[in-house]
Length: 200
Image (cartoon, rainbow, N blue to C red):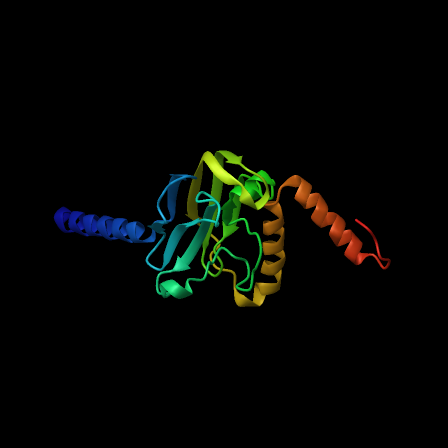
């Protein structure tokens, strides 16, 4: 009687272990800001891929990195970054780790972003970043980027709560901004709500 129970228990443990291995609820990726690789990728689960894509400008090879979470089923030419809170997003974003962002203190060195439509949160941490140059011509000299992900317990937000999620995403994006930039955004918000034309 004990032997069949033991075999059943062992089979359950093996299947549970293989399921956890497929899901990879937590993981970490760490690399230098001046790493020469063009793309560094890790699988989050069977559907999602975390990618760090090297960004370069005409003048600087070590301009920065784009951190992306994409669906594995997408064509490489049509990868959609699920860390963007909106598919139509344009402009600087906390998932971008660019030297000029660091030099301008545009975002914090630690950022946390939800994966749109999936129950994951991605954390991006810059460790001792050193930049050189002026304005958009800044480049990285040294430092490290640590990217980690974890599975959320709550799961994906239902479509009927999209309005609440949009408000949360705006708050989440604001939380990634540096303090001076947050103050500017607050001043602009107050100015726009004012009935008079104001200079900020």
